Amino acid sequence: MANLGRYCKAYPISRFREFVGWSEKNDNARKEKKNVDGVDVEAPRELTDKDYLYLQENFTVTDGIFLDENIIFDQVDEDWVDYCKTKLNFQVPTYEPIKAEAGNSAS
Image (cartoon, rainbow, N blue to C red; front, side, top):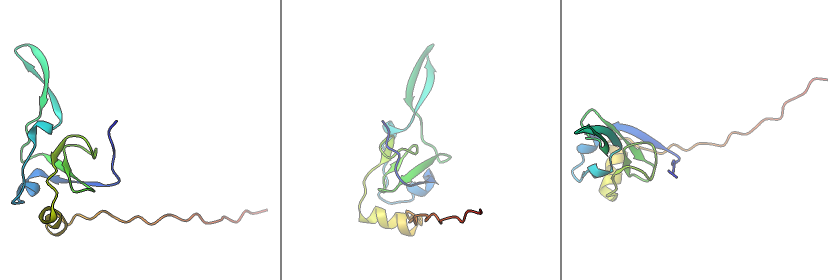
């Protein structure tokens, strides 16, 4: 079963491609159904500059919202994390817990 992380953010693939150390695992792209010689087959879709990919909380990049599926980039190192934080302004938000207030009941 796919793992949905706590946070991810979509970016145009062109923003990722600006990173010097960027490389793509195109075979991991989401599958598309195609008809080849009258036979329906599934093949990884071709990634173009019009596509969006998802930067996950662990700094991997996926072709979809799930943390552990369709991983396109997983060469996470200091330079990549710095690029994500400074150039992409990526930051996992900190959510404060909501405190329920006791309601007054009218009698």
